[in-house]
Image: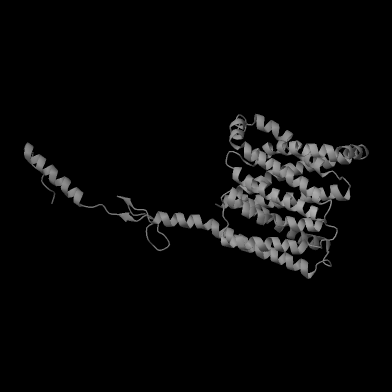
Length: 370
């Protein structure tokens, strides 16, 4: 139990750290440095992931020889995950052309709610009452904290961003369903990468390739560093992201993504001393998100304790004929497995039958001991 908790904490830390680092790296490359080719960047990331994992998948005994049966059973899920990932990236980048980044983040803060609803239908995973109550303030808090108005935003951009958020939620929930013991986080990263490349490559070639070639001629070393470094971080993040979904759930992973936004606001203020930009709206949104996260976490802890309590109550009702009293006692001082005493009538009838048989064959009964 302790090992499982430590493992989850390590995965959560890696997820938040890699997610934050990858976002900062992409924002610097796409915004500050001027590498304005997000689709090309994503295609390069996915291609690198596939090529890096290919030798491991072909040589390692844990993976080699299992690809055909796994893909035969899970090809629909793999195709949907890769496609929805590509659709999410393409539509989200397209939405930023006609809307502000602030409004984009507001809309994408609703992804945990979308994921929670889709998880009911895709994963057959129903949230508890507390978890459902926590999702709304988690999303609303981030929306309040980052919202800066709807200026310079069009209905087309808003629609594209909503569709991108829905695609992201579907990708997450389908990943939660197909991630089993055999199709693990590494395999899912390997299988979905070429699907995303196939979907995004035509868009990259049509919209960005010519400008990308011209930019590369002028900034060869910088472009190489951005693509190789970003690809390494993206590969690590994608595997940890899939592992998060496998260990936690798709909804919990989205919730942590929203909480990360609030934590980054706190960290930026603490590290850079930028407290002048903290308004009542921003502080209220952060507090609302953290309150929602507390409620959701409380509901998750209560949910994790229910199976253990139910199984213990069930075991305490089991009676095993002929069993001896257990040396362990429950909370109420009763045996964990109550003893069911054997009826004595069967033994008495068996003894009478033996005595009658001995009398017929002339065998004298053995003297009873005093």
